[in-house]
Length: 333
Ligand SMILES: NCC(=O)CCC(=O)O
Ligand SMILES: [Mg+2]
Image (tube, protein in one colour):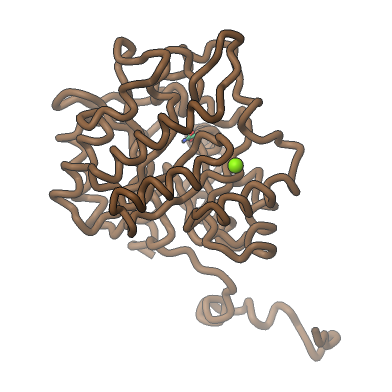
């Protein structure tokens, strides 16, 4: 790098006017970068707000279809669907996860029929469907059994692909699930169904509001997910996880949570050079909203800055509960 000295170089020269700043901007956030997570309720004409996620609503499919019309107008390219399963449908074996007429599967069929160009990302994990709130099947001592869980995840993934999912997104962190799911998709003729692996998903305390939103907080009680999700202390391990998922057939990978883990996003991009996504999770959303509500942070500016930070770290796209608002702000700017 050639570095000329002051005053030959005044760093402020390129910052002196808007057009120039825009011209030399190294990164840009656009609506194409945004994936919008949505919570789907059973029934009709049903709308519930999520107390710990101000501005986020759980919607029944009919209302989600209306909402999606607006999202399509804003140019949002993809939705990530999270079903809210009634308590009486949760079981030890999570059978509802692969019910062809489950809430997620129904939502995918309806959305695909009306909005074929909006990509649908489906969450593959068992926690919305288990009576104990863990992402997999547990044995007598409460340990989440890897290989038995993968068998159920495969059924869930195939049911999502059959229902029209464009991107299967396993968020469970079982070992070997990407390869097994990929093989099953190929066998069933879903050769162009993509996999976005939640490869580096940390056992994070930032997921609290999400568990309220899908109603799994009560099920998991005081438990945790540390025997399958990653230790926040680790970074090399994330690269290992991501490399394995790529080798098993992941088309895209994800780091989660987002802002506290941007170092992992950057390492992933630098070292593995694969399509990399990050999830600005519910806790990140909630703390931003709390500060906005108190007037401590400027909402519009901080939303866009927080998302641009992901791009700067190397993310190709971001899952964010701010997607709708960010798309609107980007359209206005
Ligand atoms: N599998 C999806 C999530 O766990 C989301 C977590 C969050 O938004 O906190
Ligand atoms: Mg893994």
